[in-house]
Length: 132
Image 1 (cartoon, one colour):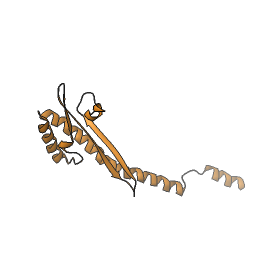
Image 2 (image 1 turned 60 degrees about the vertical axis):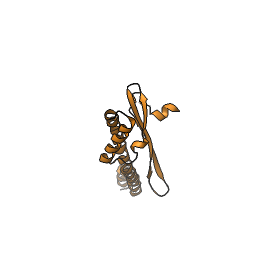
Image 3 (image 1 turned 120 degrees about the vertical axis):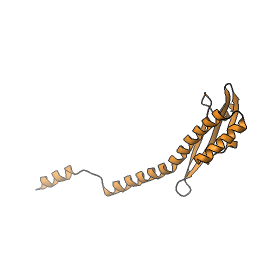
């Protein structure tokens, strides 16, 4: 009878209640962070598309800024405006760059800071980074 009980205990596998609770807590935190980060990434992609379109449609820095502002209004892009763009004269026309930070509050005093930057330059390095 003792052997039978030992045999059943040796075959038991699975997760304890505490392990399940910890796993669910970690997954919950990851989902919460993802739900707050994904919209900022979507906005970043929208801004990158908007600067490419603004660069293609504008012939002067003012026109590029105005074109970006119009696209930002339509696409609900609120992190930067046309005046925040860095527009430099390149070999094949104007190059448009941007950089900004998004602070995402998490819990209490903890927050996540995301640095975003992009450019239409063929080198892929934003104009502000070239100057440093």
